[in-house]
Image (cartoon, rainbow, N blue to C red; front, side, top):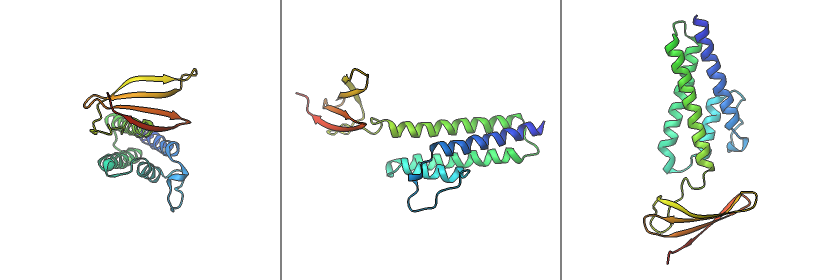
Length: 171
C-alpha cells in the first residue's frame, strides 16, 4: 500500500535526523546560533565545513552537500507522495544508506592521520610502513615509514593522541 512506501520516506528522514544528531558537536558553530535538534541539513552543513576545511576539500564538500540535499529532498518526496512505488521507496533507502556511508568516510578521513600524509621531500603519497613499535597494551608508540618514490625515511612518534613527525634521510 501507498502508506507503506510513505512510511519508508518517514523512516528515512528519521535516520537522517539521527545521523545529524550523531555527527554534530556544539563546537562546530562559530558565532552562530545552535541548530535545532531536528535540523539535519544545518547540522550536516556545519559538520562538513568543520571537518573538510581547505581548498583541497572543495570538491568533496560540494558533492557531499549535493548528496545531502538530494537525499533529504527525496525522502521528503516519498513521505508525501501519493504515487510512490516499491522502486522509488527502494531508491530512497539506497540514497540514505549511501549518504550515511559517505559521512562515515568523512569521519574516518578525519581520524586517519595518514590520509593526508605526504613525503616531506618529494610530496609523494606512496608511503609504506617499515616498522612499528607498540606498548604492551597494543597502542602504537612509533612508526617508521619509507617513501617508495625517493626513499626518505620518516619516523612518527605518538604521545597521548598527539603525534610528532620527524624526517630522517635514508643513508
